[in-house]
Image (cartoon, rainbow, N blue to C red; front, side, top):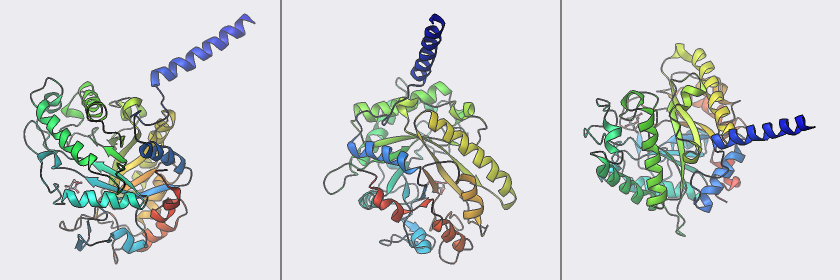
Length: 375
Ligand code: BMA
């Protein structure tokens, strides 16, 4: 009997200490998140049993051959429905500019975020902010001192706080007509496992990266009282194990979603990439499940989509069985030749995109309208 008690006690202790170590939480990382933000997280989790939401960067702002036309969307032109998820990019907001690094007025982004929220879609934000130490772009990876310089005590800390304040002003301006602040999936410091941005793997230590993440969340959440953000940890695809993927994970109290970005670069790569993408998504979805988080393919694409069956034969086959929440394809630039990642009418993968749209488990706006994600 004593042995049984001892065994039970050990098991209970073990379970407890594992949980304590992982600090599994049920709601958002922000305990004071608004009701709508809490509901969004809860409903996103629920929705993973139904399918994978389709997302597109800058979908309503411009597309191939057009720019700034009300109600327009390349996704809608091709399949008759809007995406379920929209990515928006805030690079240069930190400078106080009124146009983003992609020449988009921030006012237009704000307007579209409101429009998406009003019809029950999901908004996510990335931020290619400039290099605060050198004054270069986000891609200026010339110095390994940048992250340190913006941490408390660093020479650029005050400057960085002014950037966070500008971000705060933008985020608090995202309100519906009743004054409800709109929930946003915030995906800062993305692709940090690569070394092409100033916050990348070779540009800062693990400790400094995590300290920066903590500073940003603490500042927004506890100092600025921002409570409409879900925080997304989004690596690049250069990892092979969960340990590599999680090396700079800021902890369960600082993260709501986990994902990574992955691009196909040539036709020959297709079958090997399909296999590895599926494996990596399974790793991340498994890690999300264990930590009570949601997983996503936060950026994906094959520039100019030269593969006529890319959607059903590559994308769906790589992710269909992984239980992720959403997939986001990158933008269809109007001012950069062949820089597009979803089809437009007449594009070679158009028909296959419609087949992808018609799969019961791909979710677009019409599939999620009834889900009332914010309620
Ligand atoms: C990149 C490209 C760039 C763009 C940047 C930020 O992948 O699309 O043209 O400036 O994203 O949106």
